[in-house]
Image (cartoon, rainbow, N blue to C red; front, side, top):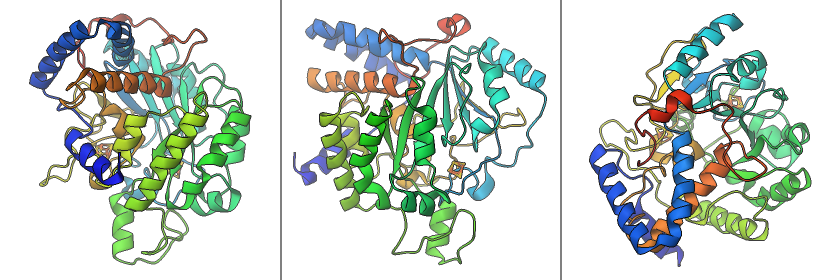
Length: 400
Ligand code: SF4
Ligand code: SF4
């Protein structure tokens, strides 16, 4: 497919199916038709449903309000939308809170921060309560072995000087060493203009350390964009070097290069690179992947939107009304992996147009499971505890 044709196809496809009950009902019926026409896809669909069910009641827990890095355009501290809650200190209070959340039927707990690894006791306290969990960490502090959840380890560069520039310190080697061979970990490479050429060497480094690799695409916060636009002076925190002409933002040409390089590495090292060709095309298209409401500026169909029954709790254990777990990120240019993958749970009309497009969506679900869920040696999706309360809840993430 030419790049122009690709851009057009992506525009027509969109990234998210509408999250309305009506669309979900239609999608469920359409899937049954497709399965009748292609019964060999039954097994794949069964697996996709297993993946989707793990996310049937997700919740976000901000376990830490501190971080030891200074990433340029930080998602958390910029604008302070998620940083104002005063953390509670008692472990018992966290346990009581998790217990109530478990009773509410939370199936998937996302542990976020600033840096969750700075609060290991809060992570360990969660283990008896949630069947599935996912921790987003910067990889500089080892998360105790007792924590039975998937760990997404963010890396931003594959050489020391660029890492220092982007994060205020060179930390990627430490992250690779800490999580070497740890089956809970997946390296999450946030690609920016400065690191496109690092894709092959990061793949190699992950292979050498027995770690899978996936990708995130740098997405600016509105605070960061304002600073660039207003030509604000640099500070010593999260706006240290960027200018109009020199910053981590990606052009259409950069995205094109990303697409080709990722695709190449996926084909060469399928055991290491956990990604999906269709998703790669969607996220690297010249036009942003999410449809945005013109009045609010919010991507209403984004799968990461915090809408009931999905909830977000600050470190003071109070529920927060934020649009998603990265509320200061600008939806108009957002290509974050969280919003990207979660928007694929509900298949769009284009995903269900033909047997081939349905098969591509099933593959995307399989990859999503490999990225976000703790793998078991037999390849099954392993909950840390039985689904219990979550089992009978209505489907939230996808179609039932
Ligand atoms: S983006 Fe960087 S500085 Fe900000 S919370 Fe995450 S790891 Fe810390
Ligand atoms: S900023 Fe949040 S709501 Fe907006 S598109 Fe990104 S993940 Fe979705």
